[in-house]
Length: 297
Image 1 (cartoon, rainbow, N blue to C red):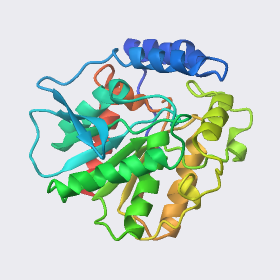
Image 2 (image 1 turned 90 degrees about the vertical axis):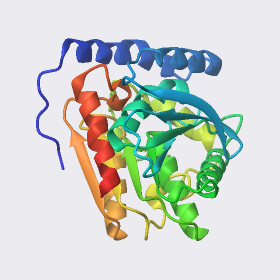
Image 3 (image 1 turned 180 degrees about the vertical axis):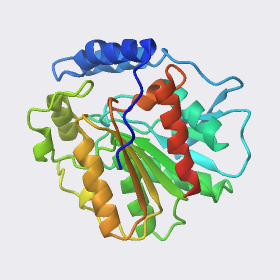
Image 4 (image 1 turned 30 degrees about the vertical axis):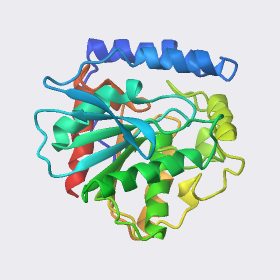
């Protein structure tokens, strides 16, 4: 479904879109050194506003560093495992802390932000191995009600992890909540041709795909090609004009074809993973609340 036409953007929304387009996007060119890109994206993560009463602590899941993010609304009913985006090469807890905090507030659940290993130092299947290990650690700690959330590369990773967990006979997540999932690393969809995205240059996506996996057709690398039967209900958000819209729509179609309940919302006027700016402008905060409602599906 397509969301109703968005209200006129707030001044802060306009400012943040400009920052994304002219501040972040140039950093995601292939020629920018990886170390510079990682430091700069982490610094952009400090532009945030957390909900009152947010509590953040460090922990370890699956042998990897993670953050535990909770708010005063925590009901103890279940937890969230959050998988950040960043093309499998950048990103982490610092870039996604605000999104995690608003998701914790709206779901009443503690959110665990996993710092899975990044490519090119740790190519596939390192990120997938870390995700599955983190999920199994949560199970071992007594958390039987787990929602897995991911954006961009983390969205594709969430689906791949659910497939591997299913194949291993592990308890499935309650739901998968995905924002602009990167589900096809072959980057061959016609939608990409000539597409100018506010955030993601196509050449950078190609660089990230090559760094992450030698075989982008592998169904656990590009889960749009996977056997998706018996996965939990899925909620997907994507911007109407962004470069990964086709991935989101094709993944939704593949999931429905496999008999999985899917709620896809295409938002007019929004850029890639605008949810990162929750707390800074109303449309982003509302989007996180709407995403979190998928827990109850």
